[in-house]
Length: 164
Image 1 (cartoon, helix red, strand yellow):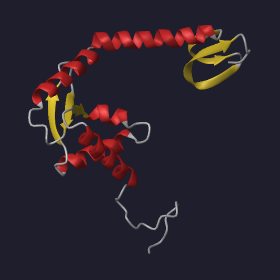
Image 2 (cartoon, rainbow, N blue to C red):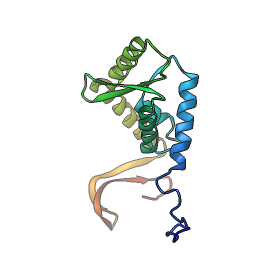
Image 3 (cartoon, one colour):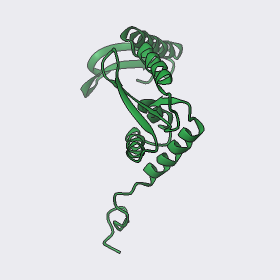
């Protein structure tokens, strides 16, 4: 047993990641249950983000690909970038399902759709502020009400609570 580090670990098993091992098990289970489906890597990262960071899920995916536990193909997207498709090795005829996934991702990643979703989200936030009687008193301001800060920000004030 070696010298302990700051967190009380002795260095045994360095390089092993219990979270990555957990994600690997969840991914294997997911692919076993969905042998006829094609997923994409970002989809799985988001699906597991409540419990695991994206990079941990991505590392587990890459390890499973390297071990041949899942199959993978990278395709270009029309709007730029790439999509990494993943499926169970028993799925021999994956191309139709893969094309369907790519089409759906391209549809929702279209700049017009993404822009519309962003504007709608902004409207919902502004509506929430208005319902709670918050009023914008400044934009790109460094000070308000005698107080100042180093960074520019939007200053909101609530008349119902009298706080900023």
